[in-house]
Amino acid sequence: MLDEIYTWLESYAGVSYDFNEAITELSRTNACVDPFQWKISIETILDQLAQANDVIDEYKQSIPMGLPNAKQIKRILTENMLSGVLTSIRAVFLQLNLDPPTIKTVDQLLDVVQTLYELLIIIVSYDINDILKRNLYEEHEESDDNSFANVIGVMKQDITSLAMSVNAIRDSYFDALDADESADDLY
Image (cartoon, rainbow, N blue to C red; front, side):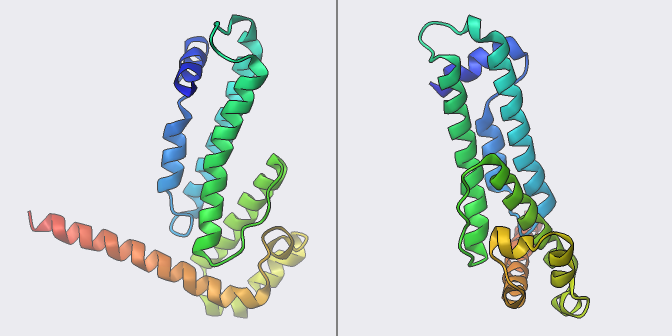
Protein backbone atom coordinates (compact mmCIF):
# COMPACT_ATOMS: atom_id res chain seq x y z
CA MET A 1 0.00 0.00 0.00
CA LEU A 2 2.82 2.43 0.85
CA ASP A 3 4.45 1.93 -2.54
CA GLU A 4 1.20 2.81 -4.28
CA ILE A 5 0.79 5.90 -2.10
CA TYR A 6 4.37 6.99 -2.82
CA THR A 7 3.85 6.47 -6.56
CA TRP A 8 0.67 8.54 -6.51
CA LEU A 9 2.35 11.32 -4.50
CA GLU A 10 5.34 11.39 -6.81
CA SER A 11 3.16 11.63 -9.89
CA TYR A 12 1.59 14.85 -8.58
CA ALA A 13 4.52 16.31 -6.67
CA GLY A 14 7.23 15.61 -9.22
CA VAL A 15 9.66 14.60 -6.47
CA SER A 16 10.35 11.35 -4.65
CA TYR A 17 8.33 10.74 -1.52
CA ASP A 18 9.72 7.33 -0.64
CA PHE A 19 10.21 8.03 3.03
CA ASN A 20 11.84 4.65 3.53
CA GLU A 21 15.12 6.14 2.28
CA ALA A 22 14.95 8.97 4.81
CA ILE A 23 14.09 6.61 7.65
CA THR A 24 16.90 4.24 6.63
CA GLU A 25 19.33 7.17 6.57
CA LEU A 26 18.15 8.22 10.03
CA SER A 27 18.67 4.70 11.35
CA ARG A 28 22.27 4.80 10.12
CA THR A 29 22.99 8.11 11.82
CA ASN A 30 24.40 7.77 15.32
CA ALA A 31 23.27 10.76 17.39
CA CYS A 32 26.22 10.34 19.77
CA VAL A 33 28.69 10.53 16.90
CA ASP A 34 27.03 13.25 14.83
CA PRO A 35 24.20 14.96 16.75
CA PHE A 36 23.82 17.62 14.07
CA GLN A 37 23.25 15.11 11.25
CA TRP A 38 20.83 13.15 13.44
CA LYS A 39 18.77 16.25 14.15
CA ILE A 40 18.85 17.37 10.50
CA SER A 41 17.70 13.89 9.41
CA ILE A 42 14.68 14.10 11.71
CA GLU A 43 13.87 17.65 10.62
CA THR A 44 14.11 16.58 6.97
CA ILE A 45 11.69 13.71 7.55
CA LEU A 46 9.19 16.01 9.27
CA ASP A 47 9.52 18.62 6.51
CA GLN A 48 8.95 15.96 3.85
CA LEU A 49 5.89 14.73 5.73
CA ALA A 50 4.46 18.26 5.85
CA GLN A 51 5.12 18.68 2.11
CA ALA A 52 3.47 15.33 1.38
CA ASN A 53 0.43 16.38 3.39
CA ASP A 54 0.23 19.57 1.33
CA VAL A 55 0.31 17.53 -1.89
CA ILE A 56 -2.40 15.23 -0.54
CA ASP A 57 -4.58 18.24 0.32
CA GLU A 58 -4.03 19.84 -3.06
CA TYR A 59 -4.69 16.70 -5.14
CA LYS A 60 -7.09 14.75 -2.94
CA GLN A 61 -9.72 14.82 -5.71
CA SER A 62 -7.30 12.83 -7.89
CA ILE A 63 -6.67 9.94 -5.51
CA PRO A 64 -7.20 6.80 -7.60
CA MET A 65 -9.59 4.02 -6.76
CA GLY A 66 -7.89 1.39 -4.65
CA LEU A 67 -6.12 3.92 -2.43
CA PRO A 68 -7.54 5.12 0.86
CA ASN A 69 -9.04 8.59 1.17
CA ALA A 70 -6.86 11.65 1.85
CA LYS A 71 -7.30 11.51 5.62
CA GLN A 72 -6.34 7.83 5.73
CA ILE A 73 -3.33 8.39 3.46
CA LYS A 74 -2.10 11.14 5.80
CA ARG A 75 -2.55 8.84 8.78
CA ILE A 76 -0.69 5.97 7.09
CA LEU A 77 2.22 8.21 6.07
CA THR A 78 2.37 9.91 9.46
CA GLU A 79 2.36 6.62 11.36
CA ASN A 80 5.06 5.21 9.09
CA MET A 81 7.28 8.27 9.36
CA LEU A 82 6.85 8.88 13.06
CA SER A 83 7.45 5.23 13.83
CA GLY A 84 10.92 5.51 12.30
CA VAL A 85 11.65 8.79 14.08
CA LEU A 86 10.44 7.49 17.44
CA THR A 87 12.50 4.32 17.01
CA SER A 88 15.60 6.46 16.48
CA ILE A 89 14.87 8.64 19.51
CA ARG A 90 14.24 5.59 21.68
CA ALA A 91 17.50 4.01 20.47
CA VAL A 92 19.47 7.08 21.54
CA PHE A 93 17.91 7.07 24.99
CA LEU A 94 18.61 3.37 25.39
CA GLN A 95 22.23 3.83 24.22
CA LEU A 96 22.60 6.39 26.99
CA ASN A 97 20.88 4.19 29.58
CA LEU A 98 18.06 6.72 29.95
CA ASP A 99 14.34 6.09 30.08
CA PRO A 100 12.79 7.37 26.86
CA PRO A 101 10.12 9.98 27.50
CA THR A 102 6.53 9.47 26.43
CA ILE A 103 5.93 11.47 23.28
CA LYS A 104 2.30 12.15 22.41
CA THR A 105 2.48 15.14 20.06
CA VAL A 106 4.70 16.46 17.30
CA ASP A 107 5.54 19.45 19.52
CA GLN A 108 6.76 17.09 22.24
CA LEU A 109 8.76 15.18 19.65
CA LEU A 110 10.41 18.40 18.48
CA ASP A 111 11.17 19.43 22.08
CA VAL A 112 12.75 16.06 22.84
CA VAL A 113 14.84 16.10 19.66
CA GLN A 114 16.03 19.68 20.26
CA THR A 115 16.83 19.09 23.94
CA LEU A 116 18.62 15.80 23.32
CA TYR A 117 20.56 17.46 20.50
CA GLU A 118 21.63 20.32 22.80
CA LEU A 119 22.74 17.87 25.48
CA LEU A 120 24.73 15.79 23.00
CA ILE A 121 26.36 18.89 21.51
CA ILE A 122 27.58 19.93 24.95
CA ILE A 123 28.91 16.44 25.70
CA VAL A 124 30.55 16.05 22.28
CA SER A 125 32.02 19.55 22.28
CA TYR A 126 33.42 19.70 25.81
CA ASP A 127 35.48 17.49 28.06
CA ILE A 128 33.57 16.40 31.18
CA ASN A 129 35.87 18.51 33.35
CA ASP A 130 35.04 21.59 31.27
CA ILE A 131 31.31 20.82 31.46
CA LEU A 132 31.55 20.68 35.24
CA LYS A 133 33.95 23.62 35.71
CA ARG A 134 32.03 25.89 33.38
CA ASN A 135 28.67 24.84 34.84
CA LEU A 136 27.34 24.17 31.35
CA TYR A 137 24.48 22.02 32.63
CA GLU A 138 23.33 24.69 35.03
CA GLU A 139 23.83 27.44 32.47
CA HIS A 140 21.65 25.59 29.98
CA GLU A 141 18.95 24.85 32.53
CA GLU A 142 18.78 28.50 33.62
CA SER A 143 18.48 29.75 30.06
CA ASP A 144 16.10 27.06 28.77
CA ASP A 145 13.48 26.44 31.47
CA ASN A 146 15.18 23.34 32.86
CA SER A 147 14.65 21.45 29.61
CA PHE A 148 17.27 18.79 30.34
CA ALA A 149 15.40 17.84 33.50
CA ASN A 150 11.84 18.53 32.37
CA VAL A 151 11.91 17.33 28.76
CA ILE A 152 14.37 14.43 28.77
CA GLY A 153 14.77 13.67 32.46
CA VAL A 154 18.50 14.36 32.72
CA MET A 155 19.73 15.74 36.02
CA LYS A 156 23.08 17.26 36.86
CA GLN A 157 24.25 14.06 38.55
CA ASP A 158 23.66 12.19 35.27
CA ILE A 159 26.13 14.25 33.25
CA THR A 160 29.30 12.36 34.17
CA SER A 161 27.87 8.94 33.30
CA LEU A 162 26.29 10.33 30.12
CA ALA A 163 29.58 11.85 29.05
CA MET A 164 31.34 8.55 29.65
CA SER A 165 28.67 6.69 27.66
CA VAL A 166 28.83 9.12 24.74
CA ASN A 167 32.63 9.01 24.72
CA ALA A 168 32.61 5.20 24.76
CA ILE A 169 30.12 5.12 21.87
CA ARG A 170 32.20 7.60 19.90
CA ASP A 171 35.45 5.75 20.63
CA SER A 172 33.92 2.47 19.53
CA TYR A 173 32.56 4.04 16.34
CA PHE A 174 35.86 5.67 15.39
CA ASP A 175 37.86 2.54 16.31
CA ALA A 176 35.64 0.54 13.96
CA LEU A 177 36.25 3.08 11.20
CA ASP A 178 39.99 2.88 11.80
CA ALA A 179 39.84 -0.93 11.68
CA ASP A 180 37.91 -0.77 8.39
CA GLU A 181 40.49 1.59 6.92
CA SER A 182 43.33 -0.68 8.07
CA ALA A 183 41.62 -3.67 6.50
CA ASP A 184 41.18 -1.72 3.25
CA ASP A 185 44.90 -0.89 3.26
CA LEU A 186 45.67 -4.62 3.15
CA TYR A 187 44.05 -4.90 -0.28
